Amino acid sequence: MHIWQVGCQMNAADADSLAERCAEIGMRPGAELPDADLAILVTCAIRQHAEDKAASKLGELAKWKEQRPGRAIALTGCMAGEHGAGLLHRFRYLDYVFDMRDTDGFFARLQDTFQGSLEGPVPLPASDRLCAYLPVILGCNEMCTYCIVPFVRGRESSRPSSEVVAEAGRVVEGGVREITLLGQNVNSYLDPETGEGLAGLLARVDSVPGLERLRFLTSHPRNASEELLQAIADLPRLCENLYLPVQSGDDQCLRRMKRDYRAGDYLRILERARALVPGIGLSTDIIVGFCGETEEEFLSTYRMLEEVEFDTVHVQAYSPRPGTAAYRRADDVPLPEKQERLQRVLALQREISARRNRALVGQRVEVLVEGVGERCRPYGRTRQNRLAWLEPGPKVGDLLSAEVVRATAWQLQCA
Ligand code: SF4
Image (tube, rainbow, N blue to C red):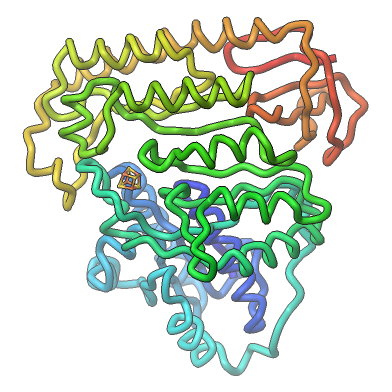
């Protein structure tokens, strides 16, 4: 069985859970395509480009399927939520389309189809992963006007904390050192058993024996509570990092996006976060060229970026998605204008990130070694999620303290 995946960390987590389920019914996950009988595509629909990639992969798989009788192709993820069974008509060689919220029906059909060749659970191949993503809340109840997620992933549904903690314990026993709790709107998590929010869940996972680091994403500013900021300050394994997409620094634009907060509210959250957690890493998402965005509105965003000095900014030019509320509005910022705004944000952020990283020279940072690159140089991430390169010596999995000796906008060099 072969899994192909694009998109966000939620899809990476879905691909892992499909591999586990497949192993339970006797299929071997992780096979290379030429050796596989089943290919599962975990797709993304956030942008047209992601859908085009999946369509192109399906074209490739059509030829693969013809080469050996009995092969099958399945598709899940956001494209399944958006287009449903209609995909079976559009792509004739596709055999299954299923929703990740309801995988039982899919696995029952697989067992029927491959009955003769399945002999029960097979061990999962040994994993050397250090970092794992655990989905804790599925779906999203917000209705940001540009976003397709609520339509393809459905309403919010939180997993019981007992289940999350048990899974965290299992992955840590399997060698994982860092866990990221995931949700499209992770900070609206509500434990269906205890009624506790994300801060309570973080506290429980933080105390899983053997865990070194804990993170969470993606948060909505409306749910960035004092309790959550306090948890970042207090919990020893929870990293000092907050990824809080603002999307625009202009109130009019935020209203058209239906983000339900004002720029001033957002700035107050960051001010509080910095007061409670000195040195906290701050990241955000920005959309430039949203419907009706004037130069003045864009400048409000630009000024917010100058004022806050984020560590990381993910910026994209607005592109309309069919099915969203914004799709009915005029996409009236010309493409060259969008691209020009995008380049201005990138240039500003490059300068800010370089300045912020250079300010760390001479300080010590904690690095979890995730890999070894060119010239045997290990690399990893700091607690604030900065990429750090080390001198040869440390092994993958080491957690160490190192001094920053040089820095660029994108990375730290440590000794
Ligand atoms: S909160 Fe995030 S996932 Fe939910 S609708 Fe808004 S942008 Fe989409």
